[in-house]
Length: 230
Image (tube, rainbow, N blue to C red; front, side, top):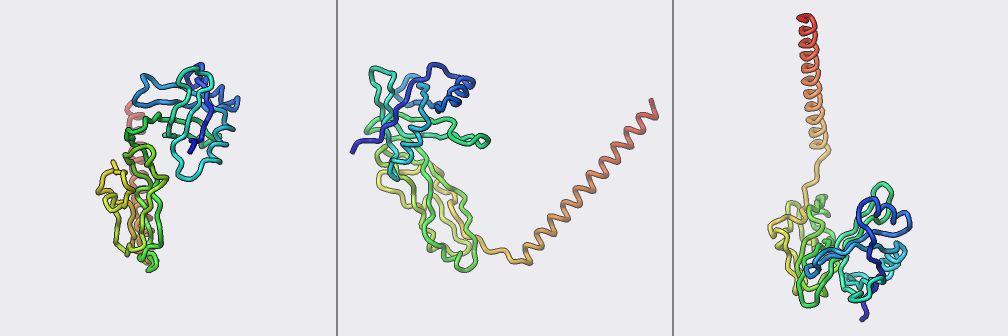
């Protein structure tokens, strides 16, 4: 099966100002790096080509081919998309990181966790708390899963699942701490307990305000005393 292809160009310049300049022209700055590259390669990509690629690749497709159109030799490279940066202010893509892979060599990358099923404890009124949403894994590039399912159906109130409890695909191992808690089912908070917590927060807030007021008055008294002494 032929890999999805994305046409890119080597950037003439690097730096923040040049990156902003090409963004205004509808281009997205990117970088290509990898263990067998002496130095990273700065790239620029037409944003429409990126959106087109994202809309056509199938779920789970992680490996793509970069075709460097302004490079004569070795202009096709197999890569994975390692990082995507968005602008929370302006919106849209701001930068892409590509990692060159070599067939037969394992790589490390992050994959998301997907909760599957409804926990037994939730049916009893418990609340799901997901503490880890993605984990770092190591495997061959062609074995990278699109996500890892976390079966929570048997979790009762007070139960938890750790990294070591996850069922990983064959040939995949996790680099994340095996004792880290992924998801828990918490006991529901009653209205009485919620009111008590709110009251406690209110008392603490009042105490803080009193302390602030006292310190302010002390500072004003000190300044007044200094003025009199002068």
